[in-house]
Length: 412
Ligand SMILES: Cc1cc2nc3c(=O)[nH]c(=O)nc-3n(C[C@H](O)[C@H](O)[C@H](O)COP(=O)(O)OP(=O)(O)OC[C@H]3O[C@@H](n4cnc5c(N)ncnc54)[C@H](O)[C@@H]3O)c2cc1C
Image 1 (cartoon, helix red, strand yellow):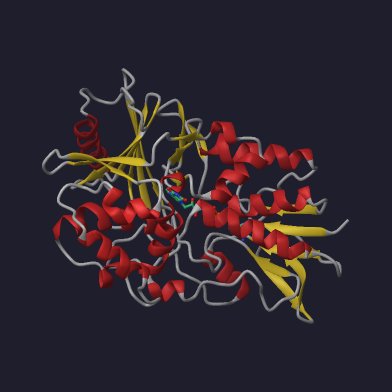
Image 2 (cartoon, protein in one colour):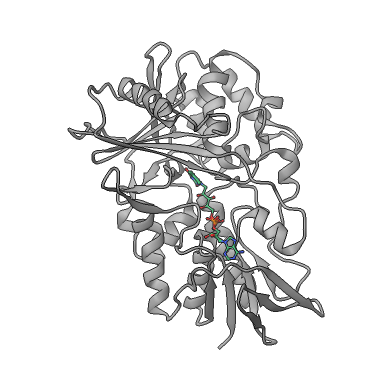
């Protein structure tokens, strides 16, 4: 039986390990921390006395790698796939509410079938055309007209949600790639997919159980410190207390975030991007949830609100500029905006503010040019992770697809 060492038990590492174990390969899964899931995980929060996610994650029905991964680990039934390709929004500045709806096919799209925010006209199609043909060095702001409702009600929120960056900072290419795989494919690829049981019970724990059934249990608290190289191959893995020499047919999949991959390989890699803030509020009584358990918010600090039972979770992307020294003031503000957006009264019975530093890799054009390829100069080393060269920005879809591809290369 061949042996592959997978370094990192985030979604990229888990998907690689799953592919390998199902191909009858022995997998040794090494993880630096005491848990799996990486940047995508859930925990029981003592303040709220509820299981909460580290941050809201939105997936769309066009994210086929994620859906397939859930089928493989038996958690597909835990996904809540919205019946319509529609996202509701509220603008706190004037109280306007609308729903962006994606029609069935691209012909309907060109014939005006896309329902856009109030004040956004056909010019948005020209913006889209410019975005789709933008060069690799251009930012979103380089190709989208400044000012006006199209910018504030469409492109700013899309850039923040998809790139975790403002249009000035984020590259046009990855935003265009996401639009190609979702909106341009029509409604079937744009239905919002949420995880009412949480990220851990849907994406992480079932993967660990599937791996355990094949005899693969992650070796937690084992940060890889170095890779020894000899004759164009990785010859040993260096950990704090031990060194693991690799036999001639052993391979390695390095599934760590971009900055860690760059350090371990001594190669330039994309820098970390901005942090994402999430405020979690436990509400009593439970807020009424309409068909869509999420809501986009404009003109406030809050950007997205997800409702799960009696917990309301609010996302602020590209949040490096938000001070944390007065988290009560930030929570107060986010709650005021949330109550207005959901039109609910009262105060939460418990609340928690979380900041995920380096939530994504930087989507700036210069950083994207440093994305590493899955194949490396070392014959038995393959890379996985959301940062590995692909058209996509930092996403679960990119992470899982990269793990699948690295596993395929490792057994080819
Ligand atoms: C708050 C937040 C919100 C997000 N929202 C969305 C969203 O709405 N939609 C979406 O698609 N994506 C979203 N993302 C991005 C998504 O979570 C990531 O792209 C994805 O989880 C990355 O997976 P990964 O396996 O590539 O990396 P990671 O999850 O970072 O996993 C890497 C693993 O490697 C381990 N590791 C690091 N160094 C070493 C070492 N030296 N030795 C051993 N192990 C090591 C780490 O501990 C970690 O477990 C969000 C991220 C955050 C933080």
